[in-house]
Image 1 (cartoon, rainbow, N blue to C red):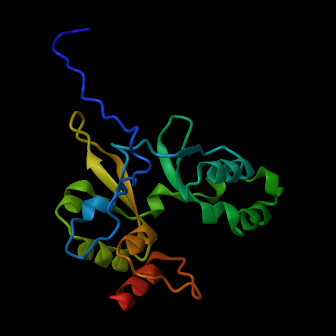
Image 2 (cartoon, rainbow, N blue to C red):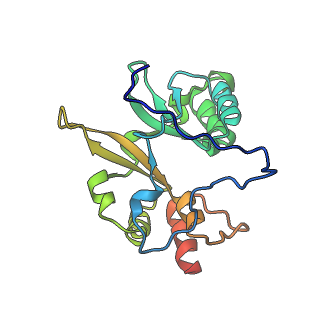
Amino acid sequence: MNSLFSPLPVQDLTRTSAMTTARPQSRIGLEDAAVHVMTDYAENKPATLASDMMVSEARLWMRLADTPIKLVENQAGDCIGILTIQDVNGEKPMVVANRQGVALRDVRVRDIMRALGDLPAIHYRDLRAATIGDLVRTFEDVHEEYLMVLDDRQSTGQDYLRGLIAARELANRLDLSLDLEHRATRFYEIVNVVQNGL
């Protein structure tokens, strides 16, 4: 091995019976930097599903992965939309099957996903300069549950999908209780709950 590298000191834990596990700081305030609530795909590989996958299979994968949202990719590997656990567990597959006149088992992810073009997007450079309060106002304006975050690819100058921000996670990180009797299903409802709790 190269002599430029040195081993790190190893700790002896034989006398340690238990240790608390570090958890990310969950509480945030309206003046904090908004960039910290983004799921950054530059740091964490996004969970994806193929657009031609059967909805029943997608439901199973989402349950096994314990994830509420997945990106949907076409055969070329490009992101074309998102799929949420509510999409696969709700009435949407049955509605689509009835509308298309096909069996429920024939409904595919592309049939029930939210297309990328239907989702609001912000730029990473704007997010870096924003506060949590700015983000709450943005969600209030767009009336959606998710914001896609775009960034510039330095080599080509073209935008690419850098990450995603979920309204529900934002509300949870603000440590505000959601009205469980009236379950918010759209982002503007979540923001209204957030604002009423402030």
